[in-house]
Image: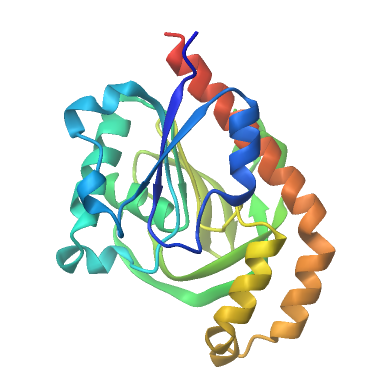
Length: 242
């Protein structure tokens, strides 16, 4: 039997599947990665998207407000539109969550406060019944790196927030998103805290404290990432079996 294929859309070299990769592969999925920003010419044809049983959109240095000047973003928007129309399981992480919200009709705004590093995410009661987010429904500490935010799309169910900032939601029955980087493990957290130290410090964030929190939280965060990725893989396999 051919393994269900998942289109993984990457936008930056230091923002990849990370902790999601292994549980998705262990679930029997084939991960077909496209670097939208660096290799636009290798984009998947829109009329061939039916080969995929799942789609994942990762983080990006660009934001939704850059769409008019970013070649790949309008094209990726069409891919997300396809996912919603066909109910192909979709998972958006950080930028991916913003693009999903935009496609679903949400308006955009700067985040009330830039979210960089660790914050507490309060999950809503609806998350306990959600097939993908049930394992994190008791709440979690999420690792962030974003300046933008958005309103909740009319067709969406809010599943998590931090001080009024949308952190997790579902559109319809087959599209999930987190504003926090659930996929980013300890190695990438430490790399971002080092490489982008000046951005954290500009917001008054203690980088040494964030590194301490990463060491304190990484095992539980990895467990939560693996369980969420595995739950998403089950949605992909169920879709492929139809």
